[in-house]
Image (tube, rainbow, N blue to C red; front, side):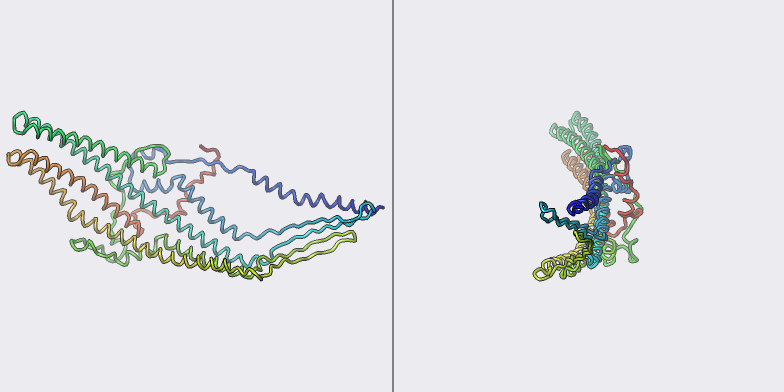
Length: 480
């Protein structure tokens, strides 16, 4: 038998199996890559859920479970968990076939050799633990960041609810003032016919009535705009005008419920009191910014440990083993691929990781100080708003109303002019509107302080509870 033919027969038998071993995995990968992702069915808040006056807890529940918002949170959590899974993966072995065909074909002689190796990074486990530690710390930081987003959402929705309620109150006050201006115009017209007031005073009364009507339309439009803004913040996909309920729907709450010490008694000299220590401690214990910064610092520490391990690149060491075929027969093959750390000792990456750790340590301390600063500011805002409401806003509203009533009596008795009566009514109207604005400022300051120390007044929710309790929009087929 011709040796050339025998060698060619062996080549023919070996090559199909080798090509099949390479092509089959590629076909499987291509099949997975061409599969279509799941279609998403979005479920925005229906308009029917917003067709009645809403309390603050109802608004918070709708906002927290809005479909797009939950989908974004679910994606962020899935990405963090995927990073942990990726860090736990064991690297794949590599199949390395090679063929050589060298010889003098015209003379009937040929040299054919083939090698089949399986290689694997045998020291991959040296970097596995710091990689997993870094991924887990980054996942904790992301979870805390999402909790921070949830608290920011609670603060924003609460502030928006009180702004909406104040806008509705302003519109109601303006309607009341419009009725009074209309009654005053009727009275002025009657007095003009009797010659008790001048034509100028009658024109002044007509202008006051027209301005009151314009103010009603402006306040009503502002309330509708606030309602539309709230509707889209709650997660609806169609324009709906939301109305705030007469009560925020929260249980009675005072600062004294958060600690054994009683709430401070507000007096004329207490509006500049510093926040108590227990208030700052309570905020530091629950504010997500603190654990987020801590987890980011832990991730930086793990990354620094990883770069120090990579200074001696044992993790890049690979071992290969297999069989080699030549015309004389088969033989076993074993080889090592060991990098020699002569020029690159990974110093740059280590220094970068050290800088990142320093930045993370500074960010952790900064988070503590920012929480302290925010709570102190919110405390001062609440204290000042409470003091102003008790000492000035409400008493001024009552006093201006009483002065307006007395001015009307004095005018009837002929002791003051009609212009003076109109000025007293303007002062009363301004005081009434200022009282509504002060109520808004007080309630928003009150709400922000409650969010700071976790005393919202209804059952607390966590990001995990919201995501797990909400349906996955990608689970159902079909979509908009």
